[in-house]
Length: 114
Image (cartoon, one colour):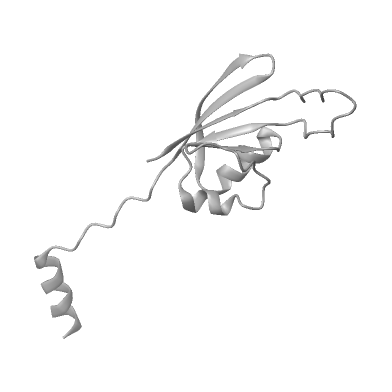
């Protein structure tokens, strides 16, 4: 069961100098995503300079938490780091594998078919 860490600001960040282009007010880092889950989140804008383990998105944290929930992740803990930052730990459960039929069960089902 993989875990991911989501860290983001709940209050919009303030833009820098007036001469700079406005940047999105939200910044959310997600660490530990599998490649297939990252592919599913492709429609959200992320920063190309993210590191190997963390991908940074420019969306409100709730948008990404909801998207991860759709992918099967559930929040297992959260904590408040500062007035502008919260961290969530999320976990994805895998379905239990089906038990393999024993030789006895296979012979019983074959006998029923005859």
